[in-house]
Length: 430
Image 1 (cartoon, rainbow, N blue to C red):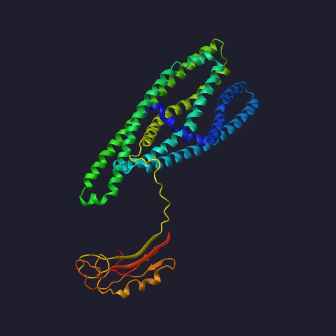
Image 2 (image 1 turned 90 degrees about the horizontal axis):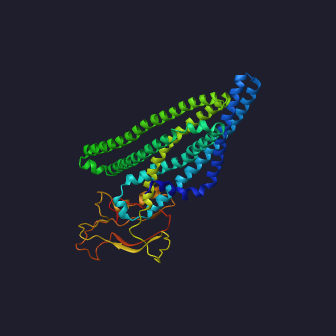
């Protein structure tokens, strides 16, 4: 599956929730537009502070507090609406995957590891929901914040802004390279976790066989080896992150230092005032957080892409047996069960026992069911006890021999409970 096409497969699941996503996006726009406004006001505050204008400083600070209040309310709306949409999308996807699995042939389930299917239906789909949430809750606001603040920086001084972008292409290449490596490690880690889950399901469901063959030590060794491979895969991903953030952070620090040098030169040339440069520095500071978040989100998106691939691999599996068009449709079953004049007996029985097992000594026919009748709820019908006499049963069986079930008539209606009550050997199992 092509990596670029993976997330596009989720579009049909986003469309039913477009209203919720739109509401979240509107809140995101309000949240984002507050940043350049705050950067501009920061320059004003710096000028009032240098001038010692306390009145203007207080009034501007009150305006800043109001802007922060609006921004945080928009952030709440953005987070709440996107959490609702992401959880609904994950629910729809999980239900559709489960419904698709119900259409597959038995031959598929004989080969597919149960633990792997469970992991895909739980962890992989949860990760997809988290990625969808992050796209609108974190990644999109950060990208919009970068665009808005960057536009404001160009408005203040386009020469300084363009010069500070020298290291941006290199940072982009580094982030892309680290993201591709992260995708490889994530796919390997998730496959190993699925294998580990399959081992657990296999061992716990067959624990009697493990004990019967004294295979406890073997299973412990097998589990330990698989867990170690999983640890190595996760450590490889964690080590890659440990390398990525310092490298990208160092490149960003270089760009800030270059910015300060160029800013000082612009001020000396009279192209930029100190107040404007203060506002410019605040705008640059507003880029630090979104750059870090975008870098982190890119890694998580690569991990989520592995989950998307694993989920939509299931949709590509088609049933081995396909229903023909025009097949006869079975009517709805009412569930009624009826026995009419049913008789049954065993061949080769040495004694006339009603049931496959032997009777308990000292138990007579008068004990069968009658003495327990008072313990049966009135809503439950009682099937009267079967014959428990002990005359010999001929071999081979002949119609003249005693029956274990003889002319049994029983009607069980849908939802009705019927208790078969009797002593051991009275014929309940038969």
